[in-house]
Image (tube, rainbow, N blue to C red; front, side, top):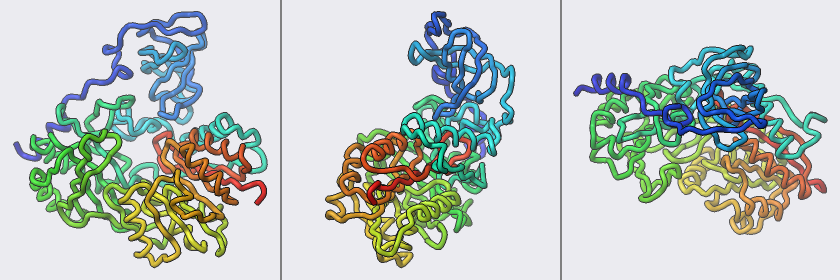
Length: 491
């Protein structure tokens, strides 16, 4: 079979079976309850959408029964007819939209052919500015008001306008595609499913160059059984500054012997934009979602990617963390430095420092910066990046942020910047921060709910909140970055 034929079969192949939340035929019969009224599984109801959940589904209400129903592709203010599909608890259900009776003012046709199935984007049917931005701003405001308990959020300029993104598509510098070797499907997860995949020939959030590269990789992977049987993920990173791609083929086993044809085919067709191809071998026994890598093998070219933010150049390894929206990350870091108001006498801690991208910005004004990061490859990149840019007042330490005092040998920070994962700060990390009590804390997060929860802890333990500002790094999704600035009350 030719590569062209394999690619055509892949693009036109059968769709995977949808999960229960999307496919009513796979749902068992059930009844959910509203205000004393039963709503049968499969029953069509008229609903009003009142909000959007953090997963991007519309939060809809049945006015007659009071039942709350989560319906994908519905927008606040929309009146719709939906079929009740399943219940998570007796107080709410999930549904599938049958028709729109009254549209949201900002509704539009989705830009991507896969938007209604793929779980990557949930807001493509809503105009970006101002409607997507308004939704995100409101979600952050509500999180800090309800979860953070900040009653004065709308006063004294504490809550500031969201910073929107110039590019609502093709902005991501990293996109990961999953592989189902049994169904021979490569693409993204079906919305609401951890297992089922939808065929995708592109992702409109990554660049056109990355999409062309992805299609050629898929054509080879799908044609060779020995390759698709071991490949778990295809990850493509793109450098805006240097217009190059780094391909990371994540496999269950060492696949170097099986990937030779893929390397030859792809490197010949994309020599002008391809920096390197790497095979990352997953750690034996590790859960797929944990992405623990046993080893990395460079198959062609270089084993890293170079990127620029402001005046700094960064090396990014295949499995290191780096903000996925390069242009907006630069704005975010500049804002963090501005809000931190670092003086030449200040000692700054950068916790969850990744590849040192923010640390170098902070070091420009500080006496010294200490970055703490648990990922070994990220710490190696951070140290390399500091040396590459001639920054000698920053030190990177590998370890758990929960052990701040031990890792920094008891040093006392004046300012701390934290940028944890979506789960937020652990109790041990919060305890460590309250022990060292910096005069200022700048909390960066991609999850306003956990951020607001953690901010509440600091407000109850000697801090006051100066400002909260959302930054949109993730157009077409409900994800939003946010910066909260706190001060110690006695500082």
